[in-house]
Image (tube, rainbow, N blue to C red; front, side, top):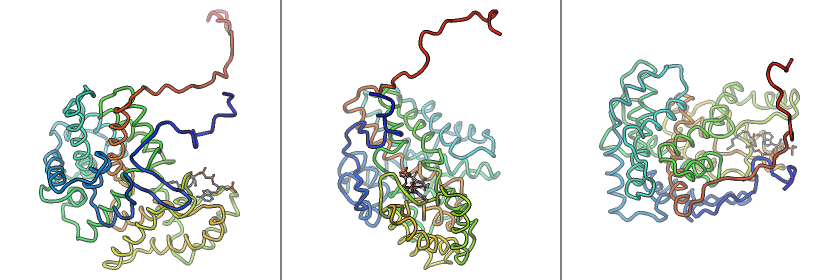
Length: 381
Ligand code: COA
């Protein structure tokens, strides 16, 4: 294969088959195990959706009750891991803290033999249950506050909010967080999922697999875009400035990109953006409607006639940042929350990879120098 035949970013190159999720970018559909994500966001919970992704089918009532119990009983992390988090620099990015502490979980709860199905399931429960605790603990410790112990009576979404703020969320806030977790739980063969599968293919332990995926998600071309959307909306400031801002940006840079718009697969509005917008409107109806939301709505309208004909529409990040910021969640926790959700998808792909594993070892045609003579150091200028 010549170099020119290799699609940049492996676009459209199949790397494996999967039964976990499916996207139709033309018709704005996303299915988890055959169920539309809109239905799950409306009807399901993050826990139930995680089971669906991991096991392939919706749980029975008993299975779901046991899964809830299993997760809740693994939320606390070892006190020495909290001590380690205390010693991280408070200026450090929470994604770096999350990656390091997920890898460190494997020191406290080792699970090295990936041919042991029971150990793999145990590690998966531990990782899903611990990630909100690790994110919330670091967020508090860096501001000089003590971590809050997990609340045994709250579900995954409400407990995360509780550990962050020390109070329970209202029913509508709980629902919006839960739906955000569901909407971000899985998205086919994206960079971090592929990373998880590649790391898993070497039979690395599950903590290392997830730490690798967290690292991949941290980049601004992947999980980091929602932070940039919020900065953009803040820069615009108010809905009446949208038009002038857009014209000025486009005039000064012909290849200017509106953050939160466009997607490699979706050529219509991302179905997750539509669900998020509906949920956001419900939350805002009960409290103050943030000005940044109005800016986002106005920006979407202004962009439609310009970018719509190119198939460039709002993606999931366009509204998620506004929702999180309205909940007073710090901007640099947006990507860690994405990771708290996506871990279920990563683990589902890890299990799928192990079912029929062969280590990834793709080709890369050599295009470098040939037959170079080694010149001893003393003879080099
Ligand atoms: N703003 C303005 N124009 C955009 C755009 C955006 N956000 N996204 C794509 N376009 C334009 C491209 O410039 C290109 O125009 P051209 O045909 O005149 O050159 C056309 O739409 C097709 O886009 P393309 O470059 O093929 O998209 P891609 O699949 O390579 O890239 C993204 C997809 C997501 C990387 C890209 O849309 C982007 O950078 N979006 C902003 C960042 C973002 O929101 N990322 C989160 C993704 S979930």
